[in-house]
Length: 215
Image 1: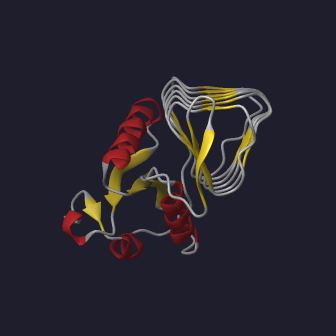
Image 2: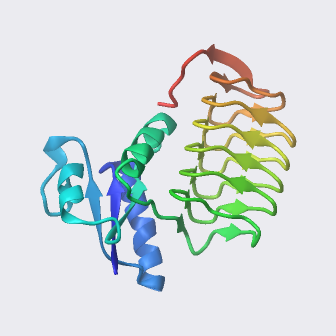
């Protein structure tokens, strides 16, 4: 039986742990669940370990990882830090989530409680779908992106790589959001959003352009 290593010992990492425990209660997938963190003060070598310690302790067949960070740029960084060493990431789907049969959940992706993913949706690697988010028919979510709690993507809309939808935000049907963009919480997006652009409000308006971080 494998070990699950959650990379990032913080608020979101603890939410990942809770979801994993719920899955483990039903499926008994992991022998134990541990954390990895790059902050020395968090490492206790009991529950939280350095990445170097994990690499020297577990082979690729003994552990799988999950990113425990909610910011897309950081999610990408940790994802490739794990992959370049030859390790794999898990797929976590809460038992209460509704995912259409034809939807593939790719490596590193987490689908939280009561989320909904409809038919012909395309969910890329290392995506975070937060509780009660709704991704409707034929939507596309790019790599490392985050769909926040209660966010909604209308049918045939898309969000690029490394992008972030804040909680309670929504995309009109057919809207395209570029790479590295941020949709502020509660925003109602009725026009396409370019790469590396932050929008907010109802209707959503551009408030920042250029390289952006969600938080």
